[in-house]
Image 1: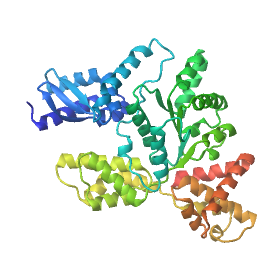
Image 2: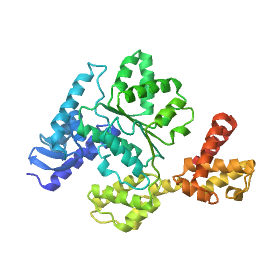
Image 3: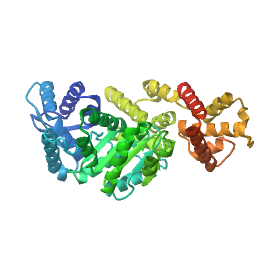
Image 4: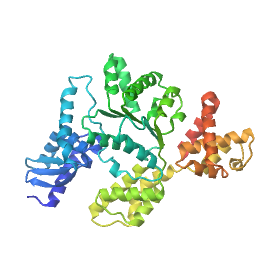
Length: 455
């Protein structure tokens, strides 16, 4: 029997080769999440998958390639067995995946296969804080009783804060309890492209069956439907069909539905029918918890001073926190020594620089807007209400809500101690003006572009 080091070494070598075999999304979502835990005999490697869905999907789709690369890496015939913590559902889940795969070629209207979601994006791996607890709680409720509570669920917030993680977690939870569930996780761009292809090929009916016969439809970045009138019409009817049949719809966006320009009013209204939950940037404490959780998942205890250092420097994007942990665990595993702060800072230099370059403050926004409208910087925090001052101030508040992760309360405080209701009013006023006045829209878009480029 091979030693414990051997099974780990064999799997690492195999994974490195599989990285060149599979697409980046397949590798990151499925292969990278598998752990080698030993051998059942000299020719069978034991792998552990994080979820039942991951076990079924890997077994169904990637077995031959994994077996081939294991044999090449070991220099002898090798096989593998894969297990997940919840063993009771595995046979049924695998059977459903196999059945779907064998029939989809002959059935144009076949239900969607298990969605291509990241295996580690489960509820267990999601760190809950004040900034996301409503979205998290609503997602769990939807997973437990899809189609009947919070339908649709609309989650909005800046990029990289966990919206996609929650969508994946809902899919994992539903699939684990019902492997026969028809689930589709897609981007709005995929929906648009599928619709266009169906029009070009004259296969609109199969397209409609594909999406309207689902049990769970999850669409990321729904804001990209803006301006696409025909696709919006099609999605409107798909949405209605699903909700009328008590099927669950989950949508994410980088902004509230009411702030998505060129989105039909009837869609805005329907997106607000169920639960609307926002996700804000995590606090320092939450970011530290995220770092420790991700490090522990990789078998490493992160030193408190290192966790606090990283969390204080990476505040904008949770994905960057995960990237930092991956690098630290990798280098520590190679050197077999704990890292000190100077090493960590050097290792994460590019991430820290990129993060710093995207840190946009309210003061920077205020100054840019004041310069454009040729008013005094002090007018941004003053009580003066003249129109030539009040509206630029509202524009600055609007941009602060769009380009920073600050809370409405914090933004109001930065504008002379105003309350969050004033910020909400400013955001609504500017949004309305952009819809009816092309000059206002061009000005705000110009300022947004300037601030986005220079931050």
